[in-house]
Image (cartoon, rainbow, N blue to C red):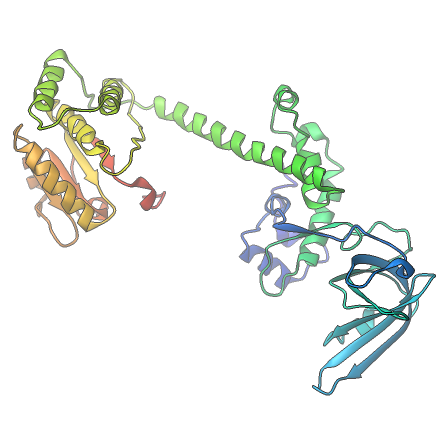
Length: 401
């Protein structure tokens, strides 16, 4: 949607430095800002007359400013003293080193403040955690008197500023119908008892109570999961459209040779290893590229499954690349697989930044398996007959790699 993709640089009444600070948090568009969720909420919902306040109570007080003074303390700090009256009592408010307040809090201003109150027999005072100016005593508050969202911040960018900008965007969303914003089909919303996306955004940023927070979190978490699954499905669909130029065929003869190799091992494959190997061989035999994630604990036998797949590839006249994240791991694989490969006539090379068995492009034809690190991605290293690529500890490589 065009509105959501608008740059934060187009936010009205927003200083350039504020825009740059938003961008430093990865907030580039309106959509990014709306999906910048609070890390917690401060509960300032208790709004009571000053006469009823107890010492140490977290409350919100509303009143009119009757006095503003600025004094210098013994430690050469400035203190801003404001007295408001809520119709029952005078309440003393104080800030330190906030001289700008003198310009924005003139006498007669209606003020809402939230924080921990100090109560003595005669006085009520507070060092406000949050404050906001109201036009009327009964106006809706944003920064006080409610569950107030608190956001992860950066230097010079307060939660108060983020709240103001998000409130503006939520007001713009009111011009858009729920159907235009909605990603999830109505039937799924109904089946999972989920609120609309529009309501979820309003509730996550400005909830009336904790129930709204939970409902919003549930919906937004569902959104994230739905998008991930949908993306995965689309990627898988596109992947299946790919065609293999050099197909690997798992013939009966090849299966027999793989089984002979397995029988020669000093151990038997576990049920999980057999199942994983069968699935890998089935995938290799398909006319579309294999894209499989093999997961298992250290020592669970992933390497032998990869070796059998590489053997099947070799029997089809193709080569295998095995990429490890570190030289030490690459050397370990080389040692293990070289021992296994010697039994079935497979030549294996090690290619890392410090050890290069292959120094010329033509020499790649002498090896059926090449094990290495990111050195395999070098422009200087080329193999034209690769049928299988195995990436060990994939999470330790960059996504683009």
